[in-house]
Image (cartoon, rainbow, N blue to C red):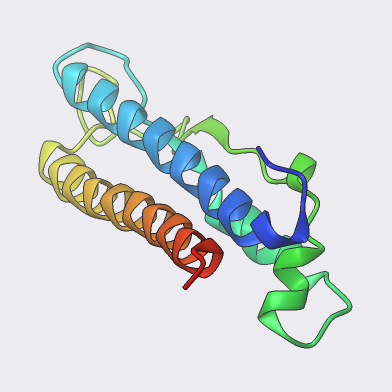
Length: 131
C-alpha cells in the first residue's frame, strides 16, 4: 500500500483485488465441499463495504471520495451464507451450478481489477518519462 493521494485509486483497486482473490478462494472451497454433509457455503462481503465508504464521503466527485476513503475500513469479510438454510437432506447448502457461475464471474472481476492496476501504473510511468 502506497500512502499518497496520487495512489489512492490504485490502493482502492488493490483492496478490491485482494477481496476478489479471497472471494475466489471461498467459492473454490464451496465447490470442493459440494458433497460434504452439513457444509454451509461461504462468501465474502466487500462491495457493500466499499459502496458504504464512498457514499459516506462528504465529497461530491468520485475522485475526491476515493482520495479520502479510509483504507482501514476497506477490509473484506468472510461470512457463512444462509447458515440456517439447506435445501438438501444432508444439510449442505451449496448449489454447484451457482458456484460455477459465481467463480467465473469472480475470475473476470479479478482479471479486470489487476488490469486496471497495471494500466494505472503504465499511465504514471508515461507521465514520468521525460521527452
